[in-house]
Image (cartoon, rainbow, N blue to C red; front, side, top):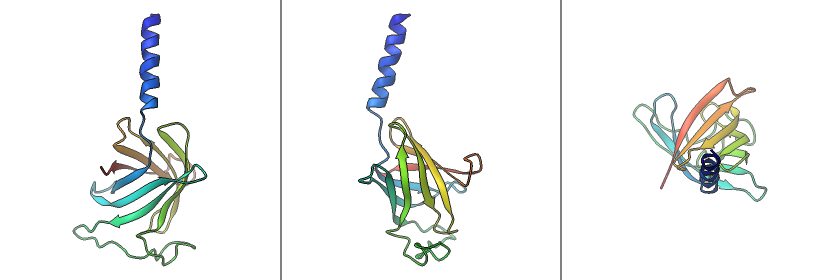
Length: 146
C-alpha cells in the first residue's frame, strides 16, 4: 500500500513539474461552429499575470472579420482588433489553472471574466468566459500553434 501511495505521489508531482504553461500562440475556435477564428499570443507580464494579443482573424465562408472594435467600450472603441490586448490580468493558481482574467469579445464589445486550464500535454487551452458566476457563460477550447 505504501508503495502504491508513493508511486502515485511521484506520478502526480512529475505531471505538475512538466506541466505546460499558457504562454505561446493559440488558435481560437468558435464554440458554436467549431471553426478556427484566429490567433492570440499569450505572454507573461512583469507583474506575473498573463495577457493575450490578437494576431490574426481568419475569414470563413459567410464571415468577414471586423477590422475595428466598433462596439467596444473605452479604451478599445474603434481600435484595430489585430494587435489589441484581448486578454488581461489572468493569474495562475497552480501550473495548469488560471483565473481572475478578463477577455473582450471584439464583435459584441462585451468584456467577460475569464478562467482557464491547460491540458496535461499543453496542446489545448480550455477557457471559460462569464459574467458574474462562471455557471453563466461560454466555454471554448483553443489549440496551441506549434
